[in-house]
Image 1 (tube, rainbow over the protein chains, first blue to last red):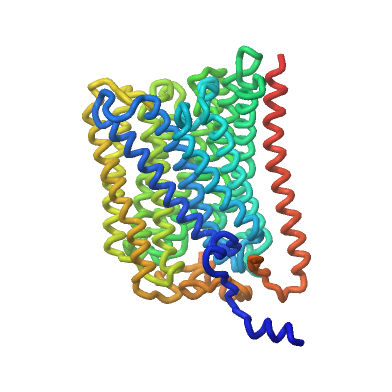
Image 2 (tube, each protein chain N blue to C red):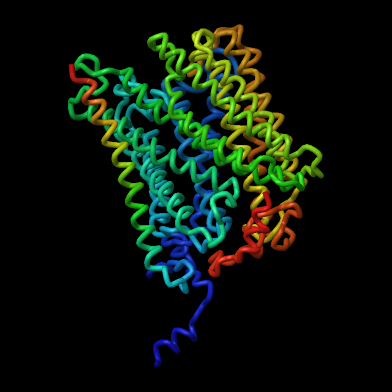
Length: 534
Length: 50
């Protein structure tokens, strides 16, 4: 009898561990989500620092600050860090925080695996970043790692390959956890077509991750054996084919673009209805559009390699299949616009970021359509036009989507409201400077400035100066973001469980901040029906 | 120290069945990932043979 009594006396309903153990042994989805978000923010600033160096060097023609090898390392590392270290972990952090709360589950289905998939990441990026200090410097062959160039990488080559394996393992484990959670842990009554769009987009993203991250892992394993074990998968001298690597890489790489952007679609689909005080227009069409985009993402990869040479039929196929993606994407843009139509709009920071996303991501989409046209792509290939295109998709697209999500759910996570005025400043500065930074790059590319070079012809000077000024402004504006969060956590005004009056969804039925374990008792059908107001 | 693991809706009688389902589906997806990994390596190997 003594044991149960002793247990009852010390019973802590939250079971919250304290000190460093809470984080190192974390199995709680909110703690792990917080760690992912802090990690992503740290990487965002490290990768951003590299971008500042790149733009500093490109401020005027000639070599000013860095040598060309280091410049190439910066472009390579900037991409790897932003994609695998900042954007993807930020989405996983948001998924960890929100998915259990939104589907009425107490936690993720596999909490220990969740801990493991997070803690792999600091090791992977420490390894990658420490390659800056080995003889020969960090990898400089571009994030695409094309052979034979990448096989000339010095001592940092195995560090690159091993860190990519680790990042891939982390993503696959995270994706397995997300799928298993959504499939098995939904509260009774939370049918698939009652799930919030953020959960849907993450479910589809997780399927993409499981299909393509192993392909990247396979590709880099083959690079490793080509480099160290005498195989010739991609070495023409031994019967291998370097172009095969490009096919395999982009079979991973194009769905990867959608891995980076689909969860943003989910967030925008949460934010716009809330601040329009209307239900999402065409919920089911949105779900099918996301699924269609995901499917199409598997059959468009070779549009990244039109100039390597391929049969005319293949060029036509990849051009037309790429253009087809505009259809479901157009459905989504139309539905977001229709959601706002005759809505009672207000413009709090999450809505501002969502609106900027809508306009600016669409610009990135349109330049993508231009790049899909084979004869035009021969002109654009490897110019700054491509750089402008994918940065419009990834910065005011994916990064603004993350900002919208953080500003939307931060009051829920902390139980406090952040400084709305400061966040509005953050929005306007980011939006103005992101356009000053990337829009001129379209002109530079169309005029013929090649990408991945530390020096350029003098006729490109003016727009490069404008672009660099935009970069410095954008970089400085981002310093507001951690300050706003820190200020919110320390001294923000307390909010109730529904921080935004127009919000719907199960997460808004929990107190703010939510209890350590979210839904220890499943929500009732009435609560689920109220949340799923689409 | 053993980390505390939340038991999903512990009162439910089908909890053990749910745990089994979770384990099975996790293994299935891990297997799919492994097939993609080895599949692409084998495919490249086969294609590279003259």
